[in-house]
Image 1: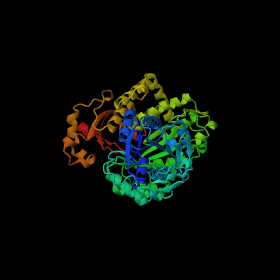
Image 2: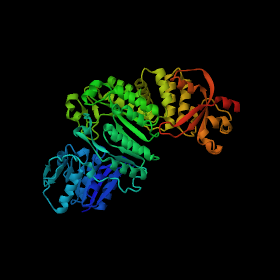
Image 3: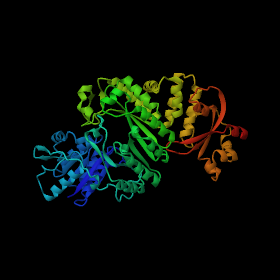
Image 4: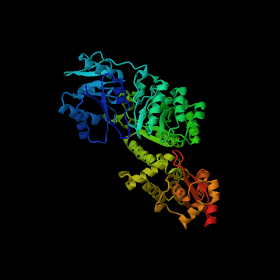
Length: 589
């Protein structure tokens, strides 16, 4: 039997874990072709590629981002080849599977819940010619006009019976984002999450995990994204995995984990201080800092502990931290969300993900949607429009703010300028983003995408429009942020201040100066000047920028001539080092 398993990923760089599990689980009884497409590809192209492969059975892994496209593809395939058997599986069809089968008669099977054993049993039955599918747990199937839903299948307790999806991968995943799990389940039961439908946590054997990670490192993947719902639920297990990765010391690859901050104790925090910069990324779900909201979504959060932990990790300057907030949760109106935003923003993580609640099928909040007055479209991605606490107008405003947080804060290219503007001109970070969002709307900036250089220009123009009293400092900080975060940049004309006479000759002389080489650039001593000049930059400023930053963004208006050397380190967390070399430059000039 010719079997194809496929899906539509959100991006080409992504890979799908589920279909590889299924393919490997039946490899000794039937070969399987694994094929991946993306939602950005033409539906006619995808359909024609599947049709030309002429499988007897085609299985799709279905999610909120690809449901509608997959259904369209399935409809066409059944029309042009009525004999093809079509199977769906995945979270988007695992909670109202009978309705899906009834609404879309071109679907033959749906696997709900964990799919490996159900899929294996189904293929075995088909190959044996057994037409009675009624005792295959976890299966929905069609007989004529009738749809039958079998009993659910118990969870697989011994996960190691599932073959690894990452054996003998060669260069298949080179420079791709790979999804991986070392465990299934979650110790928590948050009402907005599908993990709340499964109880307990099950783990793969640690030696298997190490072998898989070794294969992925050898395969030169770009990122291993652990999909474990709470990676650090078992501290010793998590530390052993991270210690293994640290010992391997892989190059040009990072590992992304979802962690619960209040479970990170002092032993683990001390351990994390040893990690190489950029090797690990942590995603930490805050969602809200409003106690009533946290209680309503059945979440366990100690924000005081979370704050302490994230600040300590931040002090190591080696781990990228990504903190999540969700707009639209129960009991959180616009003003209460503003407090949650400010609480998280003031922790200064590398990234703030301002998301909007999605009422996922099977989640607790969806089951209680009437209690909270939720309004949403009953189609993917099921995003909330409003509820009894926050209206659609405020949700739209939060979306505008989210775009600015993503463009300006999350990219990390404007950090010093933003911090100065907020500290000296606003009562809170949220008030700044509200004000900035109004300006973007007035100028029509939301209608187009903008280059990074344009974003600097817009922030400068906004500062002039607001007539901030410290505009000269802001202009200097914009220039400093640009130089700090852009290796060997050609400085945009509108960021030029404090003209630098004989710049190229002076920089060449600076890089030959023994005081610079011995005290600032010792690691580059043996590098020829013509190469070094491409690795560092020197710029002139008319405000004491380094002192302003050192003094916690105090507004110091004194005009001063200062020259700053930028050593572009290209780090994941630290992009450059900067040094005041004013005395040496003045001497050389």
